[in-house]
Image (cartoon, rainbow, N blue to C red; front, side, top):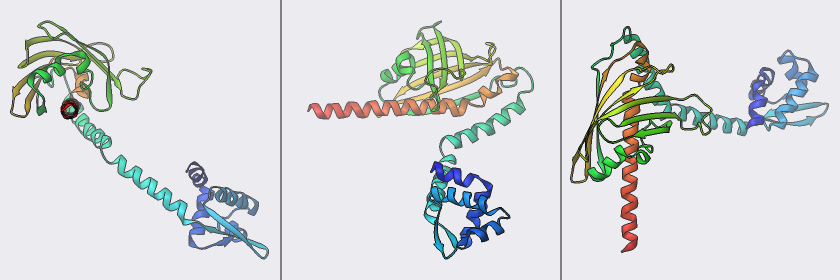
Length: 281
């Protein structure tokens, strides 16, 4: 594929390909139609032949070239797959965030612009309130879900007691060696803890200079159900700065993805537990 793309990248060779798509032609005729010198045309055709795009045969004193459709169809199929992939999943999320970002930046005209804005999330989770509580409060378990899909936790502290310290730093999920810039960092404090029932904390994302972008007041309520646990999360914004628009634009998408990861983690744990029980019977 690399040789094919390299061969097609040259405008002069692309012109020859378009001419050969009409019908097989000799070197001399191709040079005339392309308004090029024959030796130069011959070199380009040889490059296309090495890439598997054309074949040639001698006919008397002429060498006639013909285009092979197979490699072009393979390339078209590969490009079609790329186009389909680019329009789904992460790209859809990127576009959604872009629309939200534009709107929030327009609204962020002065400090306090987003104060008292609220967000509400609901999830029905597999597992008891006690198990869900552990995933909400134990750093080792929090690290597995407390970021959107394209990020990973790089530093985490969560002290599940009133007045307890919270630190959440995250990086791109593919930034394996930490050489890229930090994607985000937040610091906060736990306000209320009722194990298995209610958790409240404040978390303040930090701007690049270390100052507070805004403060999120987060309340999490757990209710047992016949199939597991219903989790309700509420966010309320205070102390919003003009520069907080980029962060606030991502709350609904980002925390929603985090909760989806939590739901998937708990579902997988439940499935593994059931599988182990069946094997021990």
